Image 1 (cartoon, rainbow, N blue to C red):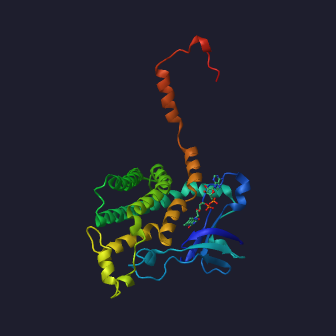
Image 2 (image 1 turned 60 degrees about the vertical axis):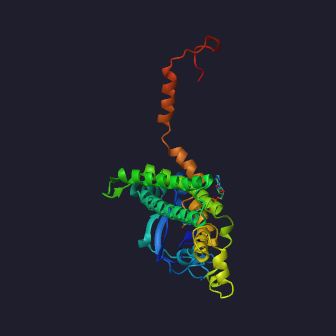
Length: 314
Ligand SMILES: Cc1cc2nc3c(=O)[nH]c(=O)nc-3n(C[C@H](O)[C@H](O)[C@H](O)COP(=O)(O)OP(=O)(O)OC[C@H]3O[C@@H](n4cnc5c(N)ncnc54)[C@H](O)[C@@H]3O)c2cc1C
């Protein structure tokens, strides 16, 4: 097998790579050559992982609280004459089986359940950082600051409601696997990429210059400037070393190379939100809402004015 897959998160640090089409194949036989799924060990001869530079700079966890621990890597995966053994192939050049696999295994439903649970945990953490930052510099009394906090809270509560509906309506599927309600999860996975960049933006707006005024651990450890910084960097409710620790966390969540990637990741990792949104529109059950409006308009029983003719042209 030859070819290149553009981006794989955690490529090269897992034991195996699984390759499968991420969308339903609609073009019939024309899609057959692109309908394949398999899993092989990462050290299979000819399989190459071209990793981007790391965003963990080997610094301590005060300087890079997130990047030093949670960098996950992204790679371009190249297949250079790779032999995929028959017993590792799930689907080969058959778009019908490929599409049935998506519909019948509920794989996307379970993937999305995990993603929405992650989104909630991430939003909880981000809200915690925003609230801690507000406390540290005493800005939570201002109207727009409260309102921005509320935006994050509403996002969190919305996502929790989606997850609750998904789990509350879960049913056993035809294989006996408890399967959440996809309607709720599908709405959540389409919505979150659109709001996450705004959550990161709120943290940046509230952090202001504090996001750049971030001396390092070594600076605080210096006999010469450490005590000056500790006093100069204080916030309303915290001392300098602790205030900078909070702002370094906020920076690493949204503005460092690690943080910027997080925002980019949340927007794109499940697919292009625009294309996903188009697919969402197409599959949405729209008729019942249009019928509701038709019924409403009919209820008044308004006769067409004779001046424009009694019969409809359409
Ligand atoms: C950090 C990160 C991690 C990722 N991890 C993984 C992973 O682990 N596994 C994996 O499989 N993928 C992964 N991806 C890839 C992800 O699925 C793609 O980025 C996503 O599907 C968008 O595709 P693309 O990057 O090729 O953008 P493109 O398709 O090149 O799109 C670029 C821009 O052009 C617009 N555009 C392109 N075509 C059209 C069109 N027909 N109509 C309208 N607009 C169009 C898009 O809206 C977008 O704004 C990751 C991406 C990122 C950023």
